[in-house]
Amino acid sequence: MRADEPLRPYLAQLERLPFVRRAEARPVGRGAADSSLDGVVQLTTPTGKVKLGVEVKRTHLTRAMAEHVVQRAAGAEDLIVMAPSVGRELADFFAQHRINFVDLAGNCFVRLGEQYLAQVEGRRAELRGP
Image (cartoon, rainbow, N blue to C red; front, side, top):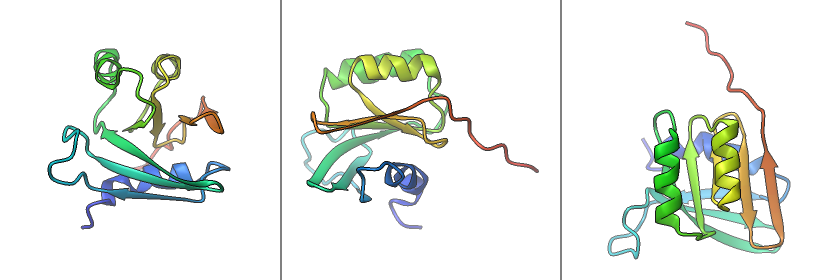
């Protein structure tokens, strides 16, 4: 399995945004400034490339987890949270604190500087049968 395999569904959602031409994931290198990150995403836009640190949540995202992310990020706009589902309340909380996120249904808040902004809410994950 490739290192970016768990991120592929999130990368696909990011590539659905009108200003994202390509989304690629890379692991965080040794000795990186913030080794608590799960990786780095590079987004190719019409005007260039943007790198975002990635924090992946593999389980249900709680308010406490979201508050922890906001405290650690301290307003940094170069972070994106990837979680299976981000409810409306947490989506608003992240957007209020300018924390980028994307979930598996395609809900997101992605702000790249002052040039690009996408905010998608209300999508539900597909139900999978047995």
